[in-house]
Length: 192
Image (cartoon, rainbow, N blue to C red; front, side, top):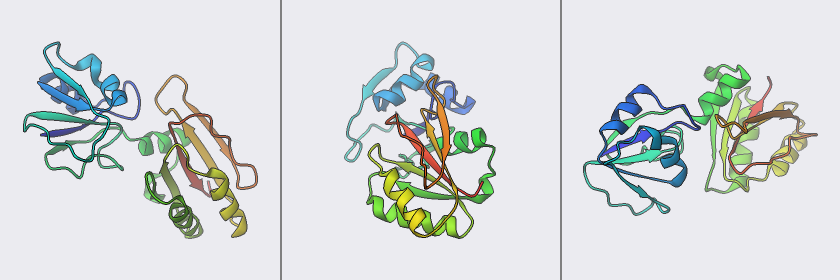
């Protein structure tokens, strides 16, 4: 099996991913991942949309699609060859012109948001620039309140729909955080 990162938006497939997808006979993935890969798949390729990834039993010749990069809160923990993709972390830091060497990754996806908020506050306090890949319902107002309580002055960058035509990046502060308008977003927090 191959796990292929299709990038976080249109046009972000790597050459290695394109080659693997052109050769694929069976592809499995979310609707969004399939849409990102569709134009390079052969007409004879079987395409299967998946809604629940936790209990998959796929054939050995399957190609499993992952949005962004499979190793960033993705499907890279499964057995098989991993072909990385352009992640939302890479694109956000490029758009904001921030060095990746200062990043601290906090997983805010499918877990207790209070824990993610606590980790973010601690990492910003240590001088890191935090990247959060959150669930759509992540409480940005709670994060802003926690940063204010600790008297941490920093920037909160909201990165929505990265790589898409509707891409929107706006900056705020804990006192005046940006307003979330999309279900597809990430956050970059730190002193920058």
